[in-house]
Length: 607
Ligand SMILES: Nc1ncnc2c1ncn2[C@@H]1O[C@H](COP(=O)(O)OP(=O)(O)OP(=O)(O)O)[C@@H](O)[C@H]1O
Image: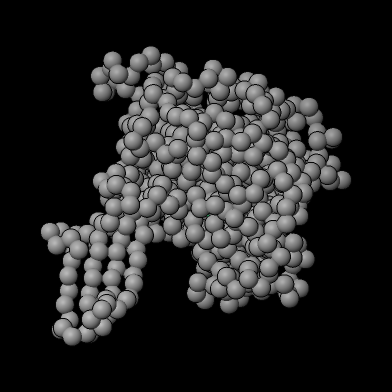
């Protein structure tokens, strides 16, 4: 590991590769405000008046004759786009029709900047989160139903029973995710009745191979076995004490053309998007997220399940109301003109609009032993101590993932980065990362220590989930309140559905920052890091002869039994195969090649 004392005194080629990425992140963050800073709040951007009828013939006037109308419209649209990402300003457009004293109709349209906080619209939850309250949005059901008109009739709706698809809220490499409403009159799923709304992940069957063999010899794609395994594991981890930190599994349907995985909806979306928005999180907010992630991981590990794909894209959240900061909390590495205010943090509730956080996406998860079975093989009670120990080490893959997330939350860029995938792989394998100045200067030693203990190369020395939950920094104060009151929880969720709708519409309108080069580089860094750790985990597991029978239904992802040979498999291929239905790396790259953004170079075979 190398340490850099001060990056500014160094020549460009001596700088760690994270530096350009960190700078790129900051530059992209500032670009989102470019439009908004040009104009004062309240200033009219564009006003076009058309006069029809009356005594004179049709005339047209510009309120700002010196500026071409088209330029103004383009500018207004541009600002509207950037403003929708910054969440701080809104460009409103107004149309009106009136008649004047000459009996003429005047149609006017104007754009204006206002300080309305569109991303932070009160969630109809300006109610104290701690209070139990009656929620009018729930009691007035007819009003609620009136709002729930599907955007369009989706082809995916045709074969789905018991749920109405309302709007698309996300996309994976092989799936589309919709917000859906359970049909109260359907007998489809008993569980669905307790959810006002759900997320429906739809996988088109023709994208999915029937068997592992087909996958090996045919086109790349997820296999049916993998879809079923994801469902099996998701269903398993949605049960038992502690499962409330995991996105709940609700229902599964297989039809002629589709697989439908129905799950609890988290209306805030991905934590990833919030990192892009705020550039980084305060220590309080980072702790808030990590504590909840740690509780989810503890639950999984207690059931013998390893997630293996822990990253900010797989952390979903419920929004809470945003409280603007009372005092300036800028770090010295921040640009005061561009840093988006994270707002006040409320212990046990959250901050930055982020409340409850849950772990999602079990597409790469693996059950390495069972905890509640009578089958001797794989049951902890019947397993030799060294095997149990090794299983524990396999779980350390997730702890590495938690470390990468924590690092990224605290500073805004991932711990390991290189444009070339093979160099990035080496850095990850060697644990080569630094607490870069100036970005880490003001981060506490407690937080750094926690990161260090998680990003420990040797899994024996790396924090276990219990170590993390006992970490001093993580326990500086009670960052979350676990509320098991499901009735109250449901009320809160239903209150947020309008917010969700608005936010999704905004995200769809402008995802330029979410898919900017730096954001994609961040995604890639996580995908590579997780793939490297999974390969390490597989290596360790294969050393353990006695390991669980559950491996039987695992895909033969690393085809060779020879460990050295395994490691030499083209990592890109491996990552794709390891990730399958949850990987987006190739898709992103293909998309980016067409739009010409700069990407990590696709590697050649490592011989
Ligand atoms: N339960 C949910 N609540 C809200 N949004 C969700 C939910 N599940 C998925 N999404 C949204 O849909 C996106 C894609 O979902 P998911 O990650 O499960 O699909 P995937 O095919 O496994 O994706 P990937 O290829 O990114 O791994 C998520 O990143 C998220 O934005």
